[in-house]
Length: 208
Image (tube, rainbow, N blue to C red; front, side, top):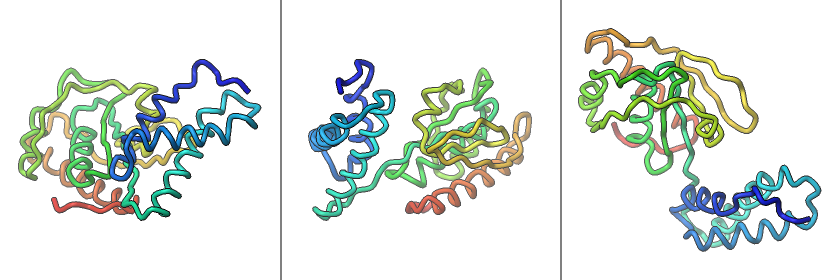
């Protein structure tokens, strides 16, 4: 079977190299992806599934090689936190996830209807927890972000379910318009939920 032109194996190599940077170089990953392709491509009759099948096999081969060679491998999980306006709760959740879960997670946030700016009290509330927060502009939720997420956390909003991805929902009140005390309440709830999530994912949780 010929390889479809649209299959981005370089992108797959880059993604896996980032996820497994603790144990493998990009060259290692490129070789493993090539081995996966050599196994999958000749017998595949569904080119539309080729990228998924190769990615799955490459992940298995990486895990097998790490175990055989005693490498301290861990896969970096992509966490996407979503709240309606991406102005407070999801921003704080991503900040806590990076702070408590590094280097095992990569955290991002977005919103279906992003606000024009992040709640200015968020940085102050996070600083009280020892987190330096350079407020990015609220980000719009995109299909690419959803596709890349291993875990999707919906905070006060609901999104369609997707196969192959874990989705969880947190009911945390939006602190929009609240005083610093209200933002602190939301912050504390977010922090507790992030700690529980990392524990549920089997990841080490750093000291806050």
